[in-house]
Image (cartoon, rainbow, N blue to C red; front, side, top):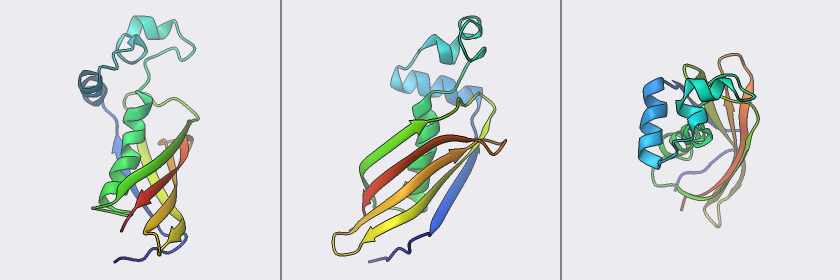
Length: 132
């Protein structure tokens, strides 16, 4: 079984496109006009459409499932704080960093963060995964 070091990290960067927002809305049924309707979104505190929060958070899942801890890992918990909006066209980097590893239980806890192209943190959280 693989071991994990405290402080070990992995990241993934992706630009979230208009097509991503539409596909996520179709897949999940999250058709909130804040994500899809320019006219409506202009009347909100954001002044423009924003990306669905869980679409952005999905980048965290991608890091966890493909890089750290990697294939075979199973989500047990995920907490998220949405700190700033993400807009279509933003480039987001999701990063996961090991904070604790219980080798006896096969459980790893990671700090999870997403940053936009301006270096602003847009999501903060923690994930607990079964790796055994």
